[in-house]
Image (tube, rainbow, N blue to C red; front, side):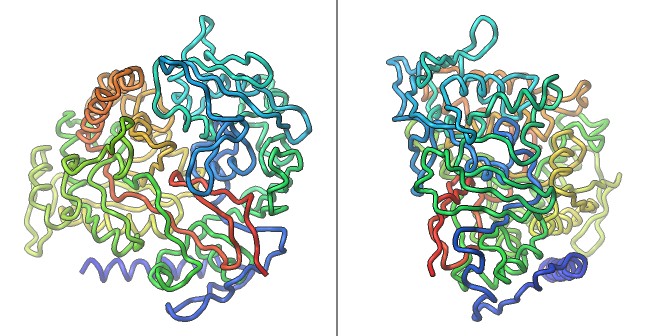
Length: 577
C-alpha cells in the first residue's frame, strides 16, 4: 500500500511542477534508461561553463554563509590559506607550505605567498587577522563563530592571531587541535576585503551588505560580474588570482533556481553544463544508465529534527517529550526512503555522526557497537514499540482493525522543507509512517532562504535537516547543537523562556567545551561518544541516511572536482571538442 501511495504522490507532484513551472528553453527530455540525453555534450561557449547549484544563495560572505551552495561559490571566488586538491588532499593555497607547529601543539606559524586582491592590492597576514576577528565577533552574528573558540584570546578579547610581518601569521590555540589545518581551509576562515566591508556597513547593522550585489573585491579564481537576484549570476576570471595562469574557464554562469524540473530541462537542452540535483522521479532512469549522472561520496547525515520548544510538547515532562520524539523516530521507514526516494545507494543511518568519520585519534569514530537503533528495521515493524513510548507520554490508542490506530489526544504537526521533489517525497513517506499510529502530519515547502530563516528562528515543529561535515572530526557534527551555535535549529538550550519539556542543555555545553579543550585525544574520543549519546537521547535529531552526492555533467567537460564536504571546484574545468 505504501509503495503505491508514494508512487502516485510523486507522479502527481511532478505533474504539478511541470505544469506550473516550465522552462522557456525546452521541456525535460524524458529517458527510458537506454536512450541518450537530448544533449550529451556542452552547447555553451568553450570559455564558459553554465551551472546550477541551488536558488538564491543565503549569503556569499565567507563569515556569514552556512550553506553548501554558498560555500561552493565562495571557494571559487575567494582563496584561503589552504584548500583541497582533486584527490581530496589538503594543500597550501595562500600559505607557502604547511604550518610550523610548536612542540606543545598550540602555536601555528603560517608563511604566506605574495598574492593580490582583485583590485590589485596585496593580500597580507593582516587581512586574515581582521577577517577572523570579524567572523568571531558576536556583532557579526556568524553562525560559525564558535569555530574560532579553539583560538586563544588576548586580554582585550580579540583572537590570539598576529601578523608578525606582512606574510607571516602566528596563531595561538587554547590547546592542541587535531583538525586545525582543515579549519584553515574552511570558507569561514577565508579573508575578506576590509575596506569593502566597512564602507558598505559603517554602522555595523548589516555586516553582509558589502557582498549583496556584484562588483565587490575578492581574491579567488573568479569575481562576481553580475547578479540578477533569484535569476542568475555571472562570475568572470580574476586576472589577479595567484594561480590565474591555470584557471581554464573565463566565465561561470549560474542559474539560480530550486526548481529541479526547470534546471533538468535546461541541462537536457544544452543550456546548463552541470546541475547539482535532478527531479526525484528521474533518478531510476539515470542511475547506472547514463554516463552524465554521477554519484560521489559525502561525509554527512541527512536527518529530520524537532524544535524542542514547540507547543506540541507543552504540558509534557522532559521524559515524555523525548518519548514522543523517539516514537516517531522508530516509525520512519528508512529502508523505503533510501530505496524509493534516495535511490542512489545511501546507507540508512543509526547514528548522527556518519559512518567513516575519523575519531581524531587515529581511528574511526563509528564502530559496530555505536548504533542507537536498527535502522534497517524501523517503520511498520516498530509500531508496537513506538505505541508504548507514546503511551508513556500520556496517549491512548484505539485499534482501527486494519493495522492502524487512532491516537487520543490527536497529534497534528507540519513538516517543513525547502522546495525540492526529493525532500517532499521524504516527507510524504514519513506522513504515511506516522499515520500508522494516527499521527497527522502536513507538509509545507518554502523558498530556500525563507526555509533557512524559519529553521534558525525555531519557526517550525518538525523539519528536514542535513549536515555535511566541514572537516573530518566528530566535534563538527556535535558542536552545532551547543546553545551558542547559529546552526542549532533544534533550539536545544535556546530561547528566553525554554519549554519546561525541553532538556536542560547545560551539561551538553560543558561537555563540548571539555572536548574542545582537552589535550588527551583518547579521552576526547570517549567524551564525543558521550555527547552523541546525550544528543540522541533527546530524540530531537532523527538521522535518516548517510549522505552521498549526485550531479549531472556534460560528457565533454573534465576537471571539475568535489570534496567529501560538498565543495565543488570549477576553476580548472576543460571542454573537449
